[in-house]
Length: 214
Ligand code: CO
Image 1 (cartoon, rainbow, N blue to C red):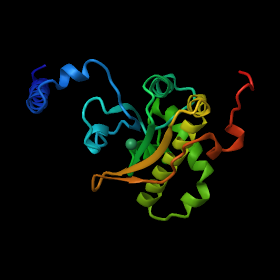
Image 2: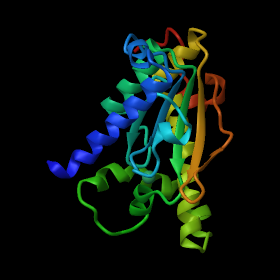
Image 3: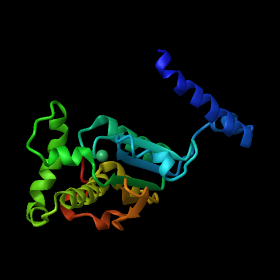
């Protein structure tokens, strides 16, 4: 595995640098984590959550998957969400999409990609819901980029619709769900200003009231 040696070297350098600037860093952060943010982003290697916002270990609780999708039957994503909200009590959830997303691009094409096509059906559903707006955009890259934004909107709603978020709001816990988008071409983030901070902002059909039963 000599070809991976550089990763261990780089890791040593990184740990050394952190320890040099703060000798107790690892000792302290190993005790417990108290992140204030849950980051739900794309698996794309060019969108490294911590680096983009200059976060240190301990600051971001992270879930990443292809095209930053929150699926209500995805046990992995829901477990991350539930732990972040109920146990870590993060006050902020950030759904961070990115322009030129390969997952979105794949979902908008008719070409088969294997197993992942099942995952990307979520995006195809979204495309169908916004077909008129999207088909009116002639430039293909611009159409995909708009779809990347619409996907963030949908995922912010998906988080807000969960029992996890609604229970947190019902018990008075501060929880804001934000929608951001990252531009691969300049490294900058943009807030899409869709922040949801309570059940009153979600569509009535998704709203769950206390005592309604399981
Ligand atoms: Co992506």
